[in-house]
Image (cartoon, rainbow, N blue to C red; front, side):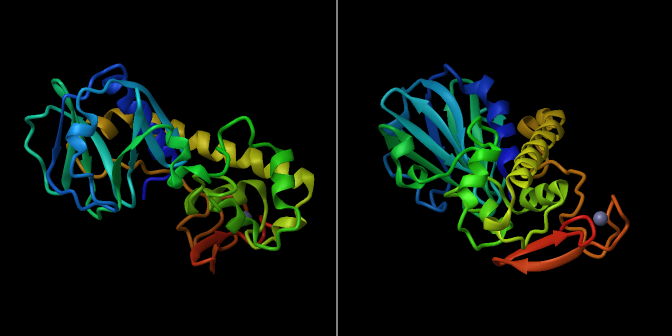
Length: 270
Ligand SMILES: [Zn+2]
């Protein structure tokens, strides 16, 4: 599943091809995504110039005069830059055409979304209640300390609550808690101010390292004719159940927490 770093890398990858460009056409091969693509999408967006390409959580917003195209990659989506006449592969459901370049959505599981929204996208119900950005300036020890007071939920579940902090998926929640030395079940409200600070730093470092890893594969990611393009990374705990901890050698444990697989080292994380 594309997580925040993949979405941000996608944003950086496609921006040079669409920023300041006018949408000249849309090719919808299969409108049945998570939300059905609007029947009149062509009339809604053709002729509009993309003024900004921004990310909010895991949503990409192609901001135009009068509104935004809201794009979400869902569980399995990816965007590639292709020539409009390039033959589509299976699951290439939609093209946004910018003259001689097309942005092609590939989405085997069809949980992605392409939606034109008139007006300010930040007020759209999908985006209006999103929490703060983990790479933004407001995500600080003070913020996390305040946001966790009185919360009995485990810190991992709170980290993954998009109404509090947006875009920290299961992989980065697991990895950040390991980096901060915090047990995922720790009740959020019990975290000291100092540990909140360590966790904020760990979340940022983990995401920035993922962006750096993705940056090196950016070319393939956007242009490749190959597979999904999600980048592989070196994880400390995620998906490493029973393997030795890279720091202390103890076996990594796995538990279900809030329906999600939770990986941790019981020695390194207290
Ligand atoms: Zn360990």
